[in-house]
Image (cartoon, rainbow, N blue to C red; front, side):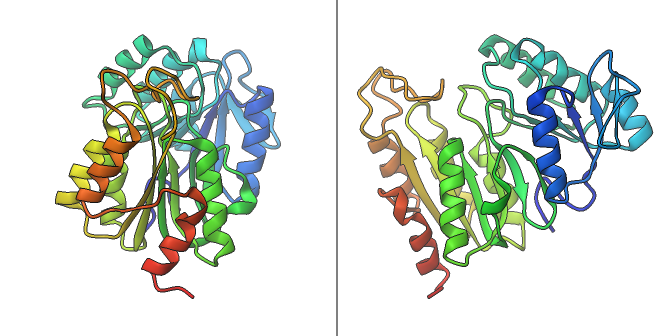
Length: 291
């Protein structure tokens, strides 16, 4: 059993004919991802390397039984792309686009409620399940099939941690970049619950950032709901108050959201907190007793 992406996933890429969409679609196909359709309004009837392109998601769902949507549209059209995927009945939406306005995400979150759809992102590197495939930007070569789940707000640190694990001979069950914006479709607690229930996942790496309270909420969830070992790192601990550090959500304000607050909450929840990101893989190796 794999979380989010599995052998039954049939992916439609919204924005497939753009340069970014076509490149990342081809990379996903190389990993074995079942991409069954693409969508670009006005380009229906075309194809990308044999993958049929439709004018709308509903048509891709009807004709190709697509149940996962990867969104690579420009930010101005992204919320409409999400609404379209929800209305078409897609079960999983992976929104990779950066720069989606917060007010648009408020509307998206409302539309997701009661829809039956789960969304990852926006502004995220996507999902990779080794042996199944990927939707997103994660480099193909860094992954290895295994038993460690990875969740991260930071795209670059996601890649670095996965590569650390792979170089130590430690594979991943699934890696999920949830995105660094203030409002995202799925947070840490959503994905932690999936990893806790997944029999293939034996340990979890959680990469957080300064800003907001998502890590503190995750700590409380881990304390009460997660039995599997969790290793965590918080990026941006040297950032001065009020300074944005890359992601729109990574800002300390009102005395909340500091790395110290997050470290303390996680440690109190029994999480193995690593302050040096280069040592995350080694900490997992120790927990899993891998020499």
